[in-house]
Image (cartoon, rainbow over all chains, first blue to last red; front, side, top):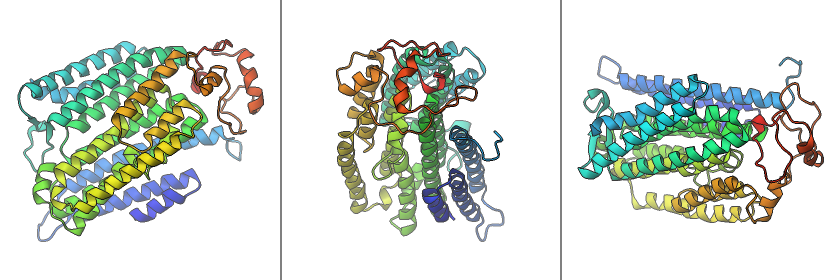
Length: 86
Length: 392
């Protein structure tokens, strides 16, 4: 998933595709972290990777929100939407 | 006392930044926060220089669950250098923004304080996941500062920086995840004891290094750097080149020497050395072709670690901007006369809604200073040019 996202980020032409590719990369990393947490033969999952995933989600969401805002601003600067709505 | 100073050096700028976001006229809040942070950093450095190394575990959690903060010689060096650079840049920025765009100054102070907090935490921390958090804090603050310019090229450069920085951080996080999966610890000291030259360690190290290489803009992952530096306000360029890029490089040094030695072979170290040498050659060749002073220093920053050259280049950019029309180079003369030296695209310039809707061609631009501008920008040559955010 990480590699797929990286490919999309590097080669995606529309900015929105790059942001989604970034999120796919993040999801790949988070899934790996969650899968690390469960080990045999311990009965309970390890909470540290869960904490890492939560922090990672928060950080990635903040970065995504910022990127979307910048993309929207650039879109308006370049001429606005096709249907005329701002 | 000095143990608390380590925590204060991160908490004070963060608290001051929060206040700065809320308060409208935040210059004095920012100055107070900066002084407090400076005091904490000096207290910490004095304590460490007088005695030995200082270790702090915030929260009192014992390892391997806790996060370890440690102050040694390298940390003190980076803390002091950062404090000096940020203080001096803040003083310069006050004058810079008051002339060009006072509205942008309101957002510059909290961002600078957040950057300072993130950098202090980055230098202190010895936990690789905590370093991810601080790295992202620094990147987000730096990206936000690049957008202070307000023009379309600046926003585009900021977006590129943001995407590259977030991708680098995710690569770093993936490396952290792999190392944790293999060795069950996030602390650098414990990791150094447990790590072994196995493929999982190599992949983890490679990923973390790749992420940090993007942050440090080391060749060949430096594609985001020239536009971001060239389109940011001068104090922001200085901070970016002097601090943010160096933070990535500092982390590389810290990780490779403290956490990874057990897993490395001589060939791995030589790979980084080759990349660094290629970066210097490439960046110098590129810098010789730049028409604008700021882009020149940005291209010179492209290769990465050469601290003395960067600091002088950054200081040169800031002082050149401050000196106004007193430069002797040809592109500086052109800049003082309101025409950009490089060929600009014929795309319509970014305008706020409600202003004149016609796209400005480059030929029409020299007549702009004489138009009645709402920002009150005078038409005399030599007066500093306002930022795009305040220009309409």
